[in-house]
Length: 507
Image 1 (cartoon, rainbow, N blue to C red):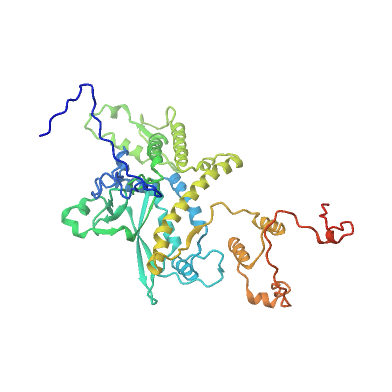
Image 2: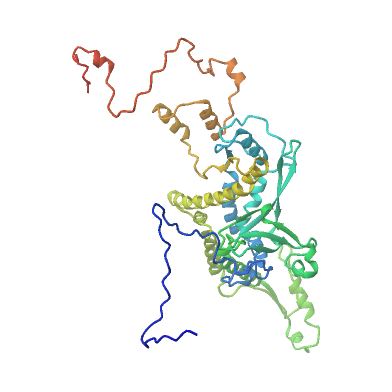
């Protein structure tokens, strides 16, 4: 046993200093590279629907997944302002031109991807016959469903291929997997998606049958390598995303209540109520007597019209009791309009609130911010489709090392009426040179038909063909000279008698 050391009371114990590696001459030490994660993003990996996408910051039970699916469906279907906000974003994305850019890929790969998605190639001739669309993938149809991620915060699709006669895998469809069919999300500890599990077929939305042990074998588990998931503004580890309608929920709820109150007020006080006053002899009858029933029937059956009338015995009275006091319709209408405006602000759609007047300049300024938001939606869809549709097609058929074309879309709101005039100015200035590829691109951008070669040959005067190249004797090319910033001297100046020594003439 080693003897104990005497340590002063005021002394502190220090950890032994780490030995630094000895530096070898000519070699630098490198910092260790972290290749694993020490932390986590999802605190409940692999859990069932109760915790897999639990949002600890959501205070409204109706907006916790999966209840949020039912709530957002109601909001979109029942409120005209929210529907207009949704379509104000969706329609520009649907109407913009989507194309496949070669991006340095081989023509075979580019044409294969374009044929699978049914999209044109940038700068290509669009006059070629279009293939049949039956039993083929439709990009426009897929885009309509993909935009539903704005409503629910997420939208899931499953990849389905078919093997062609040439042995290649062709994209048959991206089958939608609605939010109401998802039992739970399988999320890894780092927040990455492992897959989804759907409720068993035949079970209703929200029932626990999809997550019980007895139905475990009937669940439909789909791995992530077969999925295409569009998510709007996701939090780390949260694949349910955030709905476009979430900031508008309280305004939608209050607006709905105000509209119901307004309808109730109109039903109770908006029209006159027939009132019949029976004679005094009838009024003194006992409580259990039915002597007032005939007068009540007269009041209930009264209807206005050209031949309407009432006949009563002596002493009885009939009148229409109108509205007494002020109805709260003005206040309720102002509250409804206020909440309408607030719901439009949730999507930067300020210009929708100018329905009662507003300057054109103000609407234009407000629309600019909205257009940027819509463009961001299109960019998010493009990035997801590029990574999980286009690149998957190339990887499956040509290999992971094959250069891949790009899915692109026109910038929303970028088309200008003066594009042709601006192009003419650039040509006249010599900044660009017209060529067949540029002409094909401009025809494509402006929606003009492609050149008909046969018509061009038959009408050379109206549609002149490009002049053939000069086939005369060619002079040998001069060797290229190194670049010099000095101005070139004019040949006539060197031969001029005023410049016998070949001096440069400046003016």
